[in-house]
Length: 339
Image 1 (tube, rainbow, N blue to C red):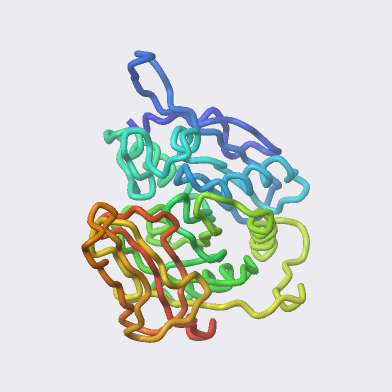
Image 2: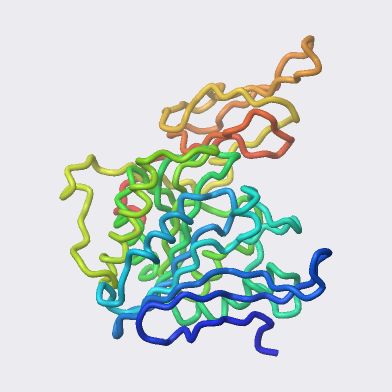
């Protein structure tokens, strides 16, 4: 079997088309059922194919809204090439405002997937082979969800191939976010962007704030940046602009590619942060405490940073378990160093 997932669209059809991916399943409420994932294509003829995804995690609405707007507001005459848009890859998680699927699956740890796996792996297998593979560019929009507060930034993995990395850096900068972030995987493998990078694609991702709230400024950065990246690649009509042309300050570029850039809770309790995203810290500085609500007599556990740098990510909720990420601290670099 090529794939149990059925796509109701001819992905190569001209014009603008709305359809869905159908993943067969059986539930307590319906013995015969499908998991439905909307998909949109906007085909304007010759040019690159770009895959745009939001909602890989359900509690990250920023990318979902930007992808929905792109799908509704873009017409074939605006496009040179083809846009394939999945506004929300994790539909049931989005409806529940949860990071994970009801099954407990983290869809962003399900790639490349397999045809005979659970639902998340069947869907990721289809995306891997039928959507990522024919695309030249993959855009995957995330935020901090309910649990983390990120700076508003575009981001990328560090990849070894210098030409792939150069094109990814250029695309990352084209989002025109106030920050840009280069990162490593610290919570397992199986990421969508990792699979796209393995296939040699130019990959652009984001972390657009988070903490369970979305500002109007964040929505504007999401859709304006997405469109500017597509103009950068020549897929969307219009001129790609730089932050300088827009009268904005140069962006802050952070490289967090060492394990000790990521700080974790040593105990279960309530996290008290002593620093916020955007703050500068020095090596050895006390940056937070874990308090024990049921033990007023017990001194809190202390968290110090092993290195200096800027605070990029903070935990957005107080309750924590041992091993939960509480802060990310990274050094600022010049974009030219990434090339």
